[in-house]
Image (cartoon, rainbow, N blue to C red; front, side, top):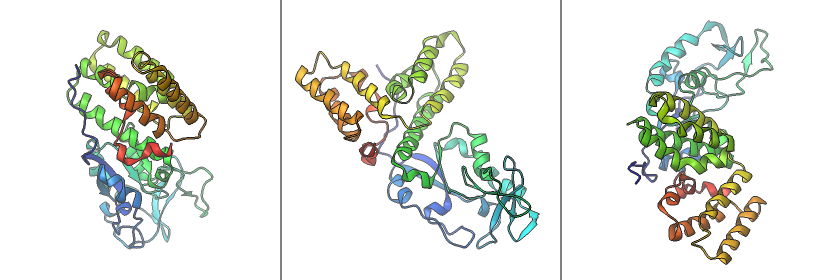
Length: 325
């Protein structure tokens, strides 16, 4: 019997950090904002956003001169474009130090692209002659965040407009949240195994290799200290989920789950389900179609093991993410 207490998916209790300008805070260099309708109109119903602006926390104020990164792209410095002799790197780092201390309460982070503080990738780093390096860098706060919390799901807001990247980010946020509250909050071998059992087919859809590797790890879990097993398991879980699952992976899982129903669902209905899955694999229909049909049969004819599979609902259905996959 499953004695975990899963997070209620409909509650906006999951804390996610976000660049303050994306929530409409007027903190940009020109006194404006970069309000994200996606975050405000959709994701805010499911995530409790924690806004933060590194520049404001560092006392740089707004409006302010334009900032840029300069020097070595792997370890850039922060300056004003019109005052290159004034190094602001340490001032910015001191400003976001407290935010990093509080980051262990978060399950994700949405960052502003191209920002010398928050840009996650492809941020311009300038040479002394004023030209950008060919190699791009990462904003100072984004780099510190990723170094301090390497397993935290982090994404740039602009990339969330891609349906596959948005679905993947939300899935990882929920997986991170569920693991923290269902395993890390009260660790035990039993709770770890139950968590893994519920995420088995999510893992299978993303990576057959990780699915098998983590299965073997937990098959021998009791031979090793629990904290060591968790320290091996969690990074591999988040790494496996770090890229969107492909149609081939989803098709494999859908067919695998359908196989559990061969004795309870009539052959004609199963064959219809197979045809629907193949149409999805060919890109003719979205994932939500076979997923909804499969959930219907599992609700009616399945068992508790199948109903507990988070693959069937890894995040709130009302987000509509599977409609676009």
